[in-house]
Image 1 (cartoon, rainbow, N blue to C red):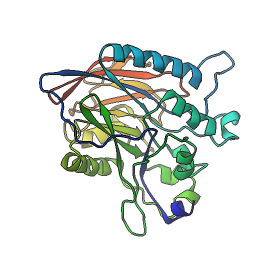
Image 2: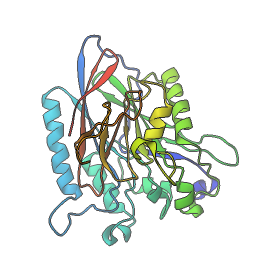
Image 3: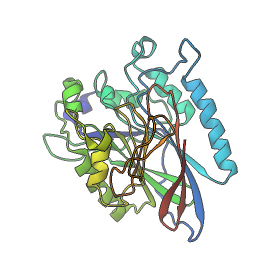
Image 4: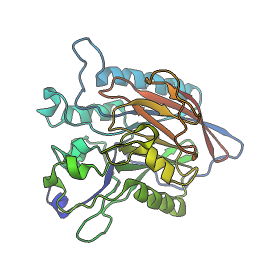
Length: 314
């Protein structure tokens, strides 16, 4: 806690497994199958509800089944969260979300963005400690206000087959308004889009990953119309160079959304529906899986010769 009071800022990505940082090289003309599973805005719902729905036990059953299916086809899985694990129901709140973080470890999450609720009731250090024994590294894009220095490694690296995958984490700068100021007296909240550009450049120059994904807790606002909220995923995607991110796994606004590349929106918004709204010309997919563990989003990609193509979303 003392370390937190000295300050850190903007965005935090908590990784639930230790990632390999070995330089990798993929085979030319080989097609790699990568499935990204994602949830967000869990808000303490680790247990099933009164109707027997949701809960981390059911989630683990689903995720384990998908992992076996993908592995049988020669593919790999990455499981991400868009944050806000804390704050929602008494059985979680009274235990400071410890059951949630321990449960997420059992499900096998690889990484999560830190949401504003992680900075309302507890510090990000507290949250990371509650995530259990397999949480060994916590990269984050945090700055100390008094020095202007970045305090932590801002990305996590994962090896999937021959591919090096980097995941960066970004949190809404609205946290300065809606978080608990006790936990960020020396924290500087910088603009996520600006920081994403810097970190992507650093990654490309140093680690040279084959794939870069952003896990965010910034919100999806249709056509970038964020109103009184801070800019979210849509605005950030528009601000980034084409092809700089393969996808954005989001949270905060609690929408069931997969956004891609057509020009008109069709039908009702629902989980697994490829929402046809041209948000940008960068080819960056934006996904979000509603709330409370009601859904697990699934994005199936094929990677070939440096290009990442989404072939299915459900």
